[in-house]
Length: 189
Image (cartoon, rainbow, N blue to C red):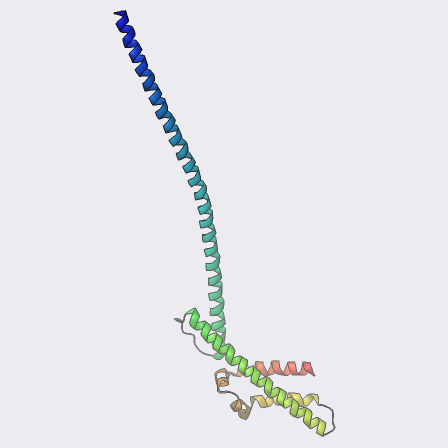
């Protein structure tokens, strides 16, 4: 009976050893899988931190761009309202920023043309005055330069300017323009 027990114990201990060896191999495999999963988790967390940083940067950039766009729209609207006030017209509340910018562009082009045409007239009149003073053998008179300024307001001179000036015929515009022109002419002399 003892022999039989020894054989059973020996078989069972061999089976136990195999079982323990298999389980140790399973445990090692699970530990390897766990280590791989842990490494994947750390990589994913590292990647998540990177992408969160990118997302935060995108949100901050979008916020700055939105703020800048708002400022541009506000400045455009203010300039548009200033032009409408200058032209003594009513603004249409439904106009988009693009439409406002187009009207501002037209206004600036028209005003530039008026200024260029006036500067050309001024140069031509200066040349005429200089030629007259040379022919008369008299020195160039300071007062004669400013004589053209009141003529600028006369009907005949006003009608000879481009048709676009009719949009800008508010008296305050002409008064300011003539005052600035006169002060710049006197400063040159």
